Every structure is written in C-alpha cells, then in structure tokens.
Image (cartoon, rainbow, N blue to C red):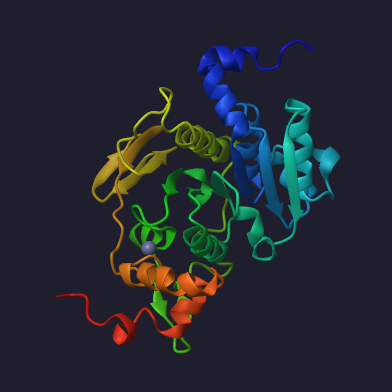
Length: 308
Ligand SMILES: [Zn+2]
C-alpha cells in the first residue's frame, strides 16, 4: 500500500503531521458540510474523531453528501466514519448515533469542535456547553442558495461567543431572557434554521473546505505552519454579494471582519463568567449556563452594579 502520508508529510512537515495525528476533533452534524469537513480532516492527517448525528442518509441527500447511494438508510455519522476508514485505516472514530444533547460528554477531551448542525437553536446549546467545558468551536454557515457563507472559530471567553457573534451577524437574533428566566435567542425561521434553500454541493464544499483549512490552522497554533489571521470572521462570496451595506463583493471573493465580544452578552458576559467560576468552585462543575440564567445570576441581584 506504500506510505499513505508521504505527500501530506512533504507538504506540512513530519512534526506537524505527528501533531495533527495526536489531536482529537469532534464533528456534530455529518450533513453536506460536516461530512466534508470530517473526511477532509482525515485526509489531512487527523485520525482521532468523535462524530455525532441523529439522522439517516436518504437518497435525496447523495447529490450533496460525501456518502453515496451505498449508504442510504445508514446513520450519517456511521457512514462518514466508514469513508474515513477507507482513507485512514488508523483512524480512531467514536460514532455517536443520536442527538448531541444526549452526548455532551463527548466534548470533554476535544481539541476543537466542528459545529456543523443546521439548527441554530442546537448551535446555541453547543455554544453554552463549549463555554462551560472551555472547548473551542468552529461554526460555518452557508447562505441561501449557496450564494456565500461565513466561518468563525469561537474561543471560550476570548472574543465573542457564538451567541454574541450571531447577534452581530444574523438578522433576527436577539438574545433575551424569557418570563421564566430561560435564554431566548429569537426566532430564525420556522425550523430554527437560517434559510430553507441549501446551496449546491460546490457552494457548500467551498465553505466547508475553508472551514477545514481554518480548523487545521487553529490546531497547528504554536507551530511554524500556523498563520495568524486578519480577523476572527471570514465571509465568502460565491456570487456578487452585499456583505457590507452599499459595497458589493465580487464573485469568489472573501472579506475578513472582526466581530467583538459583547461584554453584556447574556451567555458569555462578565457576570455570567464570574457566576460560573463562583458556583463551580463548590458544585463540582455540575451547574449549566441555563441553570445560571434561570437562577437570575445574570441580573444585578448577586453581583451588584458593575458599571461604576
Ligand atoms: Zn456571548
């Protein structure tokens, strides 16, 4: 069979390939984007994965998925795991068939999480867990009909969390506390997704390819192969796109923008962060951010007025 990794090693170097082989990546959502990212990471030298999906592959999926008709009826995470093993027989893959809400433990020893679910509400739940467990996460979005997309890596309490990032970048997102004290992120379409019409495979995989590249770049932080990026968010135009109002981006161009953290964010704001560390000192890290929000710790009652 020869050395599978000879060419990759020549490109990124022996030490970097060894480093990537020691990293563990989680991918939640093995649809057209997540499946492509997982397989591409494996083809770049990653071999330790946890893959989470609750969906079975349908025949209607195969024109926009790395798995083909042979996998129809199989769980998408299991299908992608099989494809990864065909590229990297040394891969260690923990397949979780089910919803991420039943598998939060799989975040515990990750170097990075790829949040590739369509449902925005699930992304917010992932965001809260990643903050709590201090796991960095990569989020990519493909715009309606694939006319563009965006990507951000969220690092817990350094820069924005996904909630304050989405509030700045997504129309209709407004984080508030509802009357019973739970976090409410506002409505984003009937299904909780950005837009109903997905893009073609070429458009989705373009964004997913960029996502893969940026995830690898993040995993190589501290090495000579790591590249410092101009900002935390990349917006990609597949067709002519109004990224900044009144300014048209040309087809197949990209724009880096920096989204700041909202210090008053109800999810990652200063008060909540202090509340987490105060409460977890005694409670063995068992309290959730939802509990905190519901407990009223985000109000002035506990921490007083910090504005002075
Ligand atoms: Zn936030």
